[in-house]
Length: 149
Image (cartoon, rainbow, N blue to C red; front, top):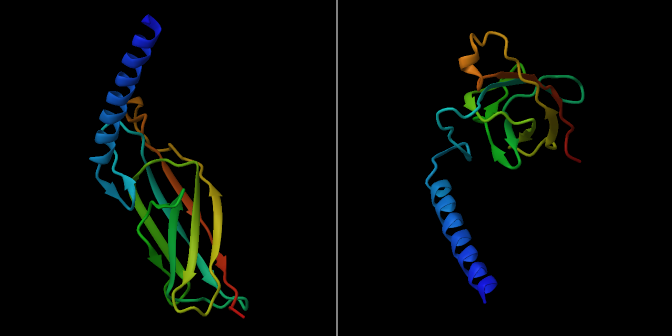
């Protein structure tokens, strides 16, 4: 009898705690589909750049580049310029250990390409131990797109 009573109390406590946690997460604001960071959360400055060319190594313009982690976009999308260069930056993103960089031709001429990149964080320039939660990641990723058949 005592064991059943304790199981009921345990179930009620679990439901209350899960309800509180669910409420606090559902109220978080998001930026690019990822919860915005709270004070004291670790964060990184991400900068992703590169060149997009075709199979003949000619630059390709207007290719959309997105950077994601687990399906969530973590940087604003970027588009390649006439010279094929693209660049995207986010000053306060959660530090992920791996990202996917996706290059897509919205006109449908080229097949999309994805690069999965392990991220290494640089703490050079972080001034003190008070900034334990800061870092930066600079990723250079070029793409050579193939025309659709």
